[in-house]
Image 1: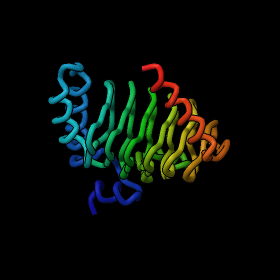
Image 2 (image 1 turned 45 degrees about the horizontal axis):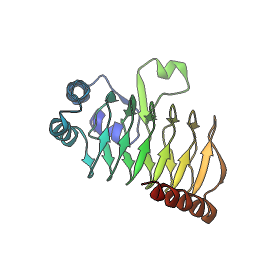
Image 3 (image 1 turned 45 degrees about the vertical axis):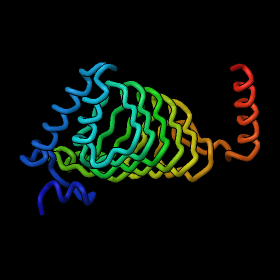
Length: 202
């Protein structure tokens, strides 16, 4: 079994491997090119996104700078928005649903290291996949840790450190991130009223 195969299975592996180093080099080159585009280079950005990611849906907006380890382990749905300084460490699969918004400096980390220092110092590491559902808004400076699943229709408050799974239809925040309340029909009613107010100003 190759080091890459071990990595993708969530097993201990060594990143200092020729195949992985070549994959990482490709991602570094593509993200460097992407981060040096301008808003006038929309077609070039689309081409880089398709080359970098495992899957990218319709209407993505990823504002530079953006960084990842491989890109080839990242699947993104439709209408994705990532604000400045997004980092995705994708040593395992990262799956992002439709209509997901990242505020600035959201970090998604699948990578982990052994607790035992002796083993850690051998450079063995591992990863756990991360899944984010549909219709999710993640506040700025949030860190999503290895192995976490965030459900659909979720709001994560800024500055959160998400260490455990978050279910559907909740507002959660904090370090560690905890559920604050459910998202209810009252929320829908309130924001529909605000939308109607907005329409009247046009």
